[in-house]
Structure formats: structure tokens, C-alpha cells
Amino acid sequence: MRTLVTGGAGFIGSHLVDALLGEGHEVRVLDSLEPQVHGPSRQVPAYLNRSAELVIGDIRDREIVAKALEGVEAVFHHAAAVGVGQSMYEMERYVSANSLGTAIVLEEIVKRRADIRKIVVASSMSIYGEGAYRDADGQTLAPKHRPLAQMERHAWEVEDAQGRPLTAIPTPESKPADPTSIYAITKLDHEYLFLVTGAAYNIPAVALRYFNTYGPRQALSNPYTGLLAIVCSQLLNHNRPLIFEDGLQRRDFVHVSDIARANILALKSDIANGRAYNVGTGQAATVLEVIKLISDQLGASEAPEIVNRYRAGDIRHCFADISRISADLGFAPKMSLADGIADLMRWIRSQHSTDSVRVAIEGLKEHVLIH
Image 1: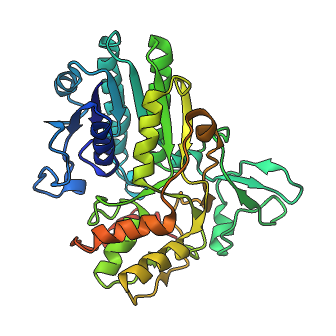
Image 2 (image 1 turned 60 degrees about the vertical axis):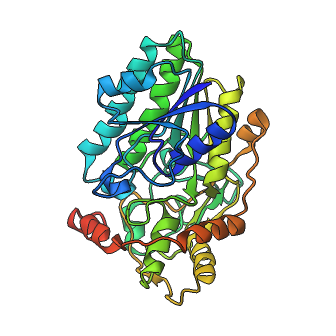
């Protein structure tokens, strides 16, 4: 099948390119080589599979998008500006690149709908806001943001109306969306735009809600990339990892190889059409647990610096219920967290990075987004 991967020169997109080529598909990549990800020289990354055709351009350029779609039968949409905190003060850039860009891609897809057999969009766990919880009576809840007064007294756990901590449970796709950042809103736009367009024009469409993805090829010098890459960058530069709140917030860390495999399963499945799926491991780990795994494997002695402050829009716990994707697509994660971090470390040891985390934090402080 002739496929297009937007954002295919990036971290997740490039792994998907490899997986598609491994399945025998023809692959074209459309990527702007964003300097924040690829550096100011905007060089084609060495890891990008040379068996894929590369079209360099922005998804907001209609002529470039039309060129990239010529002869294509399936589209995987990964092009996006990524950065939760940065999105809160660069709103126009994020909404333009993510929401407007996606609309242009879809308009061009609709023009070619007779030839398009499947469209798959990269959504995100960030659309949920807080994950799912259970109260003391066993009732499942979808709590709103933690109130400012609670955060100011450093009571980090999500509480019920009586001030009692709630218990985090795996988050299913049925949990209502409640995005807490501009980035998260644009990812929800991605999902709705694809699924609504697919339904209206009879184009099979699938949305995949990625949880905290990690692995080789993350942009280590980009302070807005994933948590594990940021921690690695700090430790490689012999700096203490900066941890907000108390480090006990829990996430679902999923290896990029499992994300790529979920895309292949979505491409092959008719059951998936019109649906959204969590893609994670179903297992939760705290930020401190993950930092210890990384530090042990790097032989780093720098202890985390727990700042006991919080960022506007941060959530406490969110990890995936993967029963839907398991039942419909037969998906099960193959990479354990320990093995996945070992894989990441093998790549990390050959990399150089600039630790720009404190610069990013100053940007958040300037906009009064850290308290």
C-alpha cells in the first residue's frame, strides 16, 4: 500500500516509517524539519530510512500537501507542534500548526477520498486531563483540575469534596475529555477532525491516544519533548533532574516500538474504523521510579531536585486502560519498562545534548505558569 506519514522525520513518525517499510508498504514522508526538533540547520536526520521518499514542507502549505498525497492510499498524521508548557504562551503557533494544519490535510484528503483506504491520527492521553479515579465508596469518578488552594498547600493528590484522596485507576476511552493545555486541546482537535471527517465522507478513520512515549530518536536538546528524554539530557550534562510536585505522580510509559505496532494493527483492522484507542502498557510508574531506572543504567550520581512547586495545567495521575485495543486489535505491549529503558540507554550513550530545561522553566515563570 502507498502510505504517507506526516511528521515522519520525527521521533514516533520515523519508527512508524520503519515499521511500514518492514511490512512491505511504500512510504512517503512529509516533514517541515522543525528547528526545535531537528536543530537550526534543519538537516534530514541520519536515522530516517532512506527507502522512504521525503517531501520537505509545512502541512499548512496546501500545494505541498497536495504533492505529498499524490497516489497515496493511507495517511498517518503525526505532524504537530509538541510541548504542553510552551503551548500555553505560544497559543497561536500551536493552534495554527496543529488544528489549522490538520484541517488543510483533511481537505486535501477529501478531494482524493476515492483513493484513500485508511486515515490514522496520532491523538494523545493529554486530552483526558486527569485520569480516572475511584472514591472511598467504590464509585468511578472523572475529577476536574485540582483547585489552586489545594495546590498552594502542597496537597498533591486528587481529593474528593471532603478532602479525602481519591484512588487512581486505569483510564478508559469512555472517560470524558478534559484537556488542561492548549497542546491538549489541539490534540483533541486532531482526533475529532479525523473521526468526524472520516464519518462524513466514508473514509475509514482511526484515532490512537498515545500515552507517555519514549525510546531512541527523541530530540534530547528539545526541553519540551517527553519526560524521559528531558531527564536523560539533564543527567548526560551532569545536572540534577528537576521534579515538580513530589515526583510521585504516575504515568504510563510506552516504548515507541509498541506505538508503531499499534499503527500497523489499526491500518489492517476494519473493526477499528471510526474508533479511538488508548495505546499504552496498562502499567503505572512514578516519575521518581523512572528516574532511578535511568540513573542506575547511566551510572549517574545526580539526585533529583524535588522543587515542591507546580506548573499550571499539570495533572496528577493518568495511565491507560488498554482493554479496548486488546480486544479489538489484539494489541499487547511487548516492551517492558526495564527493557525499554535499556534500549533507550543504548542509544543515549552515543548522543550529545544541550540541557535547556532551565531555559524552558524560565519561560514558564515569565508567563506565571509555575507556582
